Image (cartoon, rainbow, N blue to C red):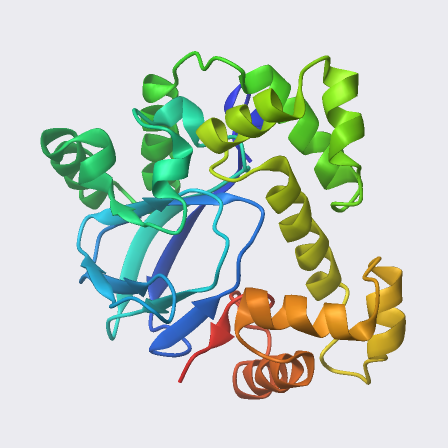
Length: 273
């Protein structure tokens, strides 16, 4: 866990190396952003079923997504990255976060070619993962900028997160002393999505993490407990976020558990093969 002030912006920094459990993994939308510095062979991202996969050699940046992404990995992968809180990417960007929503861009497009080449060279020469993560943390600290509206968006997002997306957005606007329009505009600038969309993603994520794929699932109880109007609405939401029905989702999760028990990636990514 990084120290202050980064701990208010990011969840964690990570190091990933080795053979992926599957050549292609689907990542359902999550309430957070992602920054990856690639140190191995290029990987590919398909940002939705209606677009072609694109190759990323230096890494990628994406703000809070609204649909599932498919990652295609080389035989061996090596990278460092940052799991970013929904509002946490904005202080490191030179463009509105909404421009990156469902549009993964290369790291070079965000930070410039020379800076990324230098950073990747330093990471490649580092003495082990710990030093690599320290270098990445230092790079983030160096790039940290003051961001207008960050306090408002961070506080409102934190309330949405604490209620697993159940907070009434209108009430949050009133509590913050701003209009719904102003709040939505700030969210799109700094998070990439509106408060309503972020709340929807938090609710879905909380529901998914409450599922134990190793045991029986009572879909009616799960849907009701998550605040969905009915099971049909719940099923529609599942398909919108994952492309799968709830029962098919659990089958895929069980496949991961069966074929790679205890794997570090189990829990959110899904086999796409």
